Image (cartoon, rainbow, N blue to C red; front, side, top):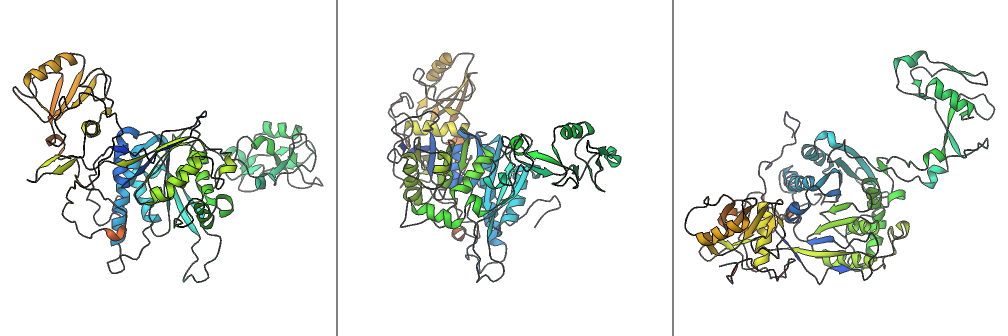
Length: 559
């Protein structure tokens, strides 16, 4: 399935989705904040309920290049929905859906950020090549093997499945470095002090290395006790003569209890304690938890409907210990039961999570509320010293900006009020939504001198001239309006005029609400484009409802 350029190929790869960059609407009923504010508490964490590809597109304008760590645990495509189709069809659909998401996640990642994706043997090796294409093969860091089960499946037909993969990529491998992990008690127990050295416990380590310079071939050294040492055949000295002499004089060379063993270096625990240890590529369940532990944790916030595939909090703590520091932004677009956000919150990281299903409210919200209220004693709570605090905002995706009228023409959705429309147009044209209280024509900016004005009014030549005079020669303004009368769009050097909705019709797919990763629900051939619907209930916009001057009149957004 690979081309001569070592790229993964699959059925339907050439087809690209064009999701709409929608705005987010806060549902204040479900947002939650601690009653007490403490230093370093974060209250701007984000939980989004909605299709995760649409949600990721919604985040692009505001969070591109800002996320320090992305962890995702996507569906593993292990269902039996494709038993009656040709081999590879289900892989093709899954890969296409994953490719769209990984590309957006790559753009959201900071230059020194890292990407972690959990996957099983069924798709791991396909996904590895796909991620190589998106991130560049040189930015692959490691394949961590996590022992998700500690028991043996005696009824297994071939092998008892006890592990998952966690593929790790850096946005730029030269810019990213993993944090070293704290040493465990088990590691420290390997150090002792049989000769009562004043520096404390130590462990004997070799004086030779597997590689070195050509000069090391003839290396030899004589210690103070008269012992002559040369590296074993095929190896090289790890230290220079000067360093060996200094260690010898400091009683940092070990010759065994009776003084006859091959010399070795005393590596002191005190010299390693502050540096920590590099992360390993095999994570045992005893260190980072397992599936059964995760389900036990999940029962504490929803005992009646335990999420089927949660991840243990210790696993996420290990990832965040390696990939982040306090205050960093963490993203999980397959939130599941909310483990990533819960652990990030307890560890003082900022977070964004996306989840489509009902368990966004039945599982994630109760879990996060317990974390915020300090009523979640399980998971990593005690280990990280969590006492409660902080908060998050709960968002849903706005309906599609455009819908078809009774004549089949695309018009602005009746669900959109003035502020929602302005914010949406800012997303489409790459502006930051920031309405001005001073200038009615300032709804957003792309720089200190470039602004956008959105209105469904038809503007006259005189109105445009007045706006142009107010904008002045040192600023520029993009005007998105229903129509303009008299003259032409290029009559004013500091104004650019675009008609809506015509200016954005070809930018994306309108009215499509489902880019689901539920493989069994996908067609094998392309259906007709889904029709836009006006059945989506209206919700309060997350923007200021009292902001004046958006329409410069009382005309409805859908008019």
